[in-house]
Length: 277
Image (cartoon, rainbow, N blue to C red; front, top):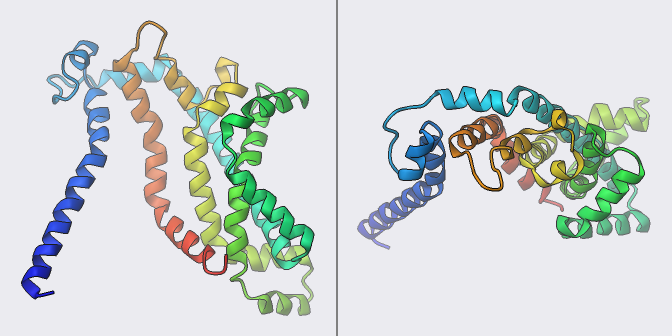
């Protein structure tokens, strides 16, 4: 390819990328622009720039949906869930890799198979199990369910990553007098930091934004998460768009900021985990 043709190709590619970026970012424009409009202005022209900025929409939505309480609930559920998912998955994967028995190989296949099961096919059995063990309508029930749903994927990611950890490091630590638990927590777990961060980010995004599972398990108003609080503005006969859109902005802003700070770990962790996976 000639230099002139190559330059034209690069310019054309950049233009296409910019247009695609604008296309994917357009929903954010509609969300942000309409979140500061009055209800009548949203219905009359949702694509226009706000004529009058109604910043009071945010404070009103915060009070009506009790967002302070919902934000606290979402933080508690998300933080505890992602910590337990990452820890249990790392421990289970480490054991399956280092004790590579037939049983552990079949167990890994079961976890991989669980990844492709649609949630809609198991949500009723899950709800029955939660009722039987007596943890329905509680944070504990939702956290346990999050573990059961998210652990298979996390184990699959950790399993491939742990294979790249040199066994000689663990043998040297054992010679120095470390027991298996000490070897894992002081030697292996720090080496798994990229995959731990990847697991935390991916699961935090899913758990924070999840609506269906909390709606099945959490019935009490004081236990509502942010998606449930936001849905309170959508009634059967009317939708309070001037309140719902600011609520959506408040709900997604923390997780977007978290993702922007942590996104580099996703590529690094998944790429490293696929080396020997």
